Image 1 (tube, rainbow, N blue to C red):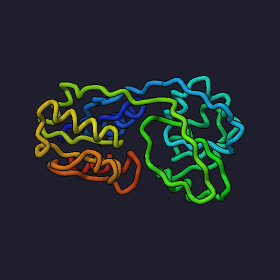
Image 2 (cartoon, rainbow, N blue to C red; image 1 turned 90 degrees about the vertical axis):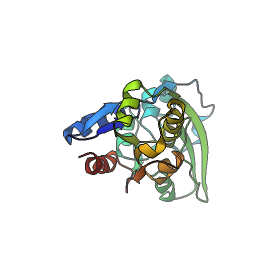
Image 3 (cartoon, rainbow, N blue to C red; image 1 turned 120 degrees about the horizontal axis):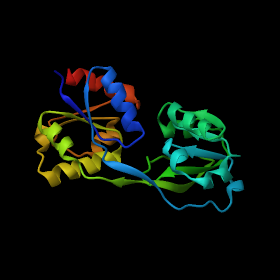
Image 4 (tube, rainbow, N blue to C red; image 1 turned 180 degrees about the vertical axis):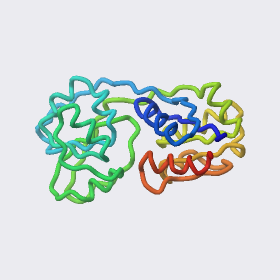
Amino acid sequence: MSRPLVILRPEPGLSETVAAARALGLQPVPVPLFDIASVPWAVAHPDRYDGLLVGSGNTFRHGGPGLAALKQLPTLCVGERTAMAAMDHGFAVEMTGNGVLQGVLDALVPPRRLLRIGGEERVPVTAPSGIGIDDCIVYRAVPRPLSPEGAAALTAGGLALLHSAAAARHFAAECTRLGIVRANVEIAALGPRIADAAGRGWRAAHTADVVADAALLAIAEQLCH
C-alpha cells in the first residue's frame, strides 16, 4: 500500500493531477489550499502593446469579458497547457515556452512592448534589453485552511506536492498553525524556487528537474510506492 499523496493545488489543475496520480497507482488526497477568483481590471490602451505574456491558463479562465479587447495581440505562453487555454479562448499563440517564462522573454527579438496579464502571484522575470513589460492582474488565489483530511494524511506519512511558491508559503504557515512538525513531513516541489519558499526543517524536500506535473509525479511515484 502506497503513502498518501497530498495534492494542494487549486482547480482545474487539482483534478488533473489527482487523475494522473491515480493512473500511476498512487493514493491522492485532494486538499486545495486556494480558490481562484477574478478581480476587476482594465487596460486603457491595448493598442500600445504588440504581444501578451501569459504564465497560466487561469488568465483565460478567470480574465472575464475584458479579454475580448486583447484578442488582436499575439500571445506568448509559458508552456503548452497555457497555449491550449489561450487557443480555446480565441487567442493566437505566437510562442510556446518549455515551462519557464524567462526563457520565453530571452527568445524574443527586440524591440517589443508586452502586457503581462495574469495572477496576483508572479514568477519574477528580467526583461531583456529592448523588451518592455507592463503588468495587469486579472485574478488572485484566495487562501483556504489545510483541511482535517490533509492534516491526517500528512500525519500518516503523506507526501505533499507543491506547485507554486504561494502554495509553499501557505502550506508552511498552515503546518505551523496546526502544530504539524516539519521534521515529520516530506515535500516535493515543482522547482527549487518553490521548495525555497516552503522554508527549511522538513524531513526531506525534493524538486522536479523540469517544470512539468509529470516530473513531479515521477518523484511521487518513487517516494510513495
